[in-house]
Image 1 (cartoon, rainbow, N blue to C red):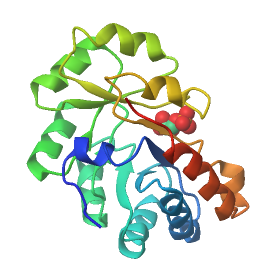
Image 2: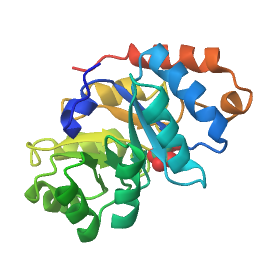
Image 3: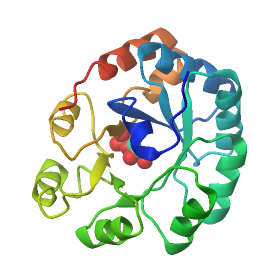
Length: 212
Ligand code: 3PG
């Protein structure tokens, strides 16, 4: 399957990007397969556990239809580690000048995080036109996204943080929302129970959500 190279093209593949924090390396491949089978092929593995890079590497190797990326990338070194592990994109809850420079130098698609208009403007100036809006629910949610749409007409967002199946449709109805991120499609209890069929069902429901 085709593997898009820019962040907007990756976001266009799915309405929902699962945000996955993997504790056990053995969960990585079956979890990724369940999500991809359900229709969510873009996967964000947060770099918050010891095994995150190993999990990313395994998915990149064994789940060819997945477009796997690294999340919670906080510095340039992690950016490079993620790229070497096979990440097709990187996500950060915010951004720093060093991180933006690492992304530009490597050419790896990057989804930097913002919470304010000024942060969004600064990244827009550097050519990052698709931004993670984080933490979406507490930083202004739908109201923020609606309010910034006219002044920030060239920018689109992937709101993430506190979004679930009940609120995702309203986010996805906004023209400046490219997709949403969230962990609800892979709940911790389902992963611990290795309920891959249940996770596939959650993914299938999320994959059906419509964008404008
Ligand atoms: C995160 O970084 O944890 C993501 O924003 C996911 O948030 P959620 O668990 O509220 O979906």
